[in-house]
Length: 200
Image (cartoon, rainbow, N blue to C red; front, side, top):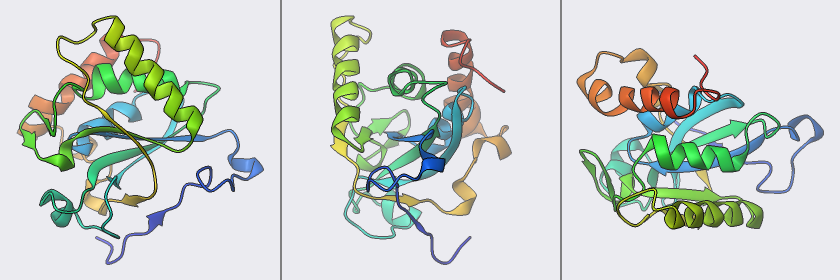
C-alpha cells in the first residue's frame, strides 16, 4: 500500500482537457461498497478505466479506515473514464441505477450501513447535472422502483484514490462470501439487462 495516495485531478473539471484526452469523459458514482460498483463498470463496453476511491466529503487524503468510520463525509465511490462515442453518460447512469446498486436505500447498501455507503452521483458540470436529473425523473415517472430514489446529486470537488488493495478487488476475490452474495449477482444482472453493453 502506498504511504501517500495521489489526489486525482479531473482535467475536464478544471477545463484543462488536452486534445489527447478529449475523447474520454469522466463520471463519478457512489453506490455502497465500491468493490461491486467498480466491477460492474469494468464490464461495460466503452469504459476505459475504473478507479475506486472517496468523494463527497471535506477530509483531505482520507484513509479507508477514516471513511469507514463515517466521520469524513466521504462516500465510497468509483471514477469511471469512458469513451462517449461508445457509451453515453445517460447509459452509464442507467446501469448505475438499475444494476450497480439500489438507489432507494438511504445511507446503506445491503449489509453496509452509514453515510459512507450512500447513493450519490457527483457531477462535474451543469450538463452532467441535467442528465442525472433527467434520468432520475424518467425512472421515477416509469415507477421503475417500488420506493422513491434517494440518490444524492452533488458537484464533484475532489476524488481521492483508495488504497491499492481496493483496486479491482472483485477480480482477485471471486470466492469471498461477501463478493459471492453481494457483488457477483450485479455482474449477472448486467449481462441479463444490458447484453449489448457487457464485455468480459
